[in-house]
Image (cartoon, rainbow, N blue to C red):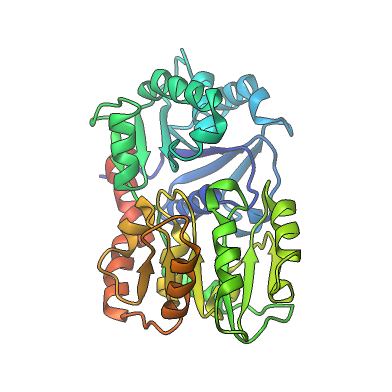
Length: 362
């Protein structure tokens, strides 16, 4: 029998816009409806995604503290609240949670989730990336379970981090189809062009946005716009690059948007030019809304789009001409509803939450 009295907690720095934050909110809202006692431990009780969280989920503020200074406050919160299970996501939050829970006498299961690799980014992070991987090899085995969000992440944890297969549980990112469709129908309080391509994501090096900008510059149709949703460390650099382009007046940066789904629903094509993706939920959302997709051949994109008609994968991460040609081809594609239905059934919150309940909670 499932024990609905169990206390499930999630640990994150904040609820600012991000993929892990959205996944955990989806989990939390569903588990609350299933009768579990659900809470969030936040370093800072802030973020645009707070409004998406069910009011029945209890929030614990660690005191507006930065993640790297949260060890003792998190430990005290665990001792006070005494959750049966606490789940974190992201390399550094994972390690903060594990260190904070060391030598605890109470039986709180520490569950961490891995959502990214250190392949392409390690070239830029240098020694710090290698230190992080070393810490992961030392710390991750101390967790009760480690969630891998894709086949690629599963192999990464097994081969690069050296985790036992008994520690790893593959649980892809969930999608709540009913809620997603409802959110996509919300009104937009600003005007958008009639025809546009769309990118949604963090504006960082790994997203490879210069490829997209350069491909859009040489793309033949002149009546399309490029809309970019997101914020990040490369925002200023990308804005400067876009200003120097011939199509500068057709490139729109919207910054971070709390709910990008109404904008996605109106797009003619979703483009994802990343150098690395683990399991990008935005691709599932585009498929659900019957929006054609073009992506670079990251492991995550290939896993989601495999044998999916109406989608395209480039063969390169740097060939601007190829990407531009595929953009033109992709806007004419049609998504097959039957294939999408099968994919979404696998990734539905009901199916994924049952995995969480079976593999971790119950």
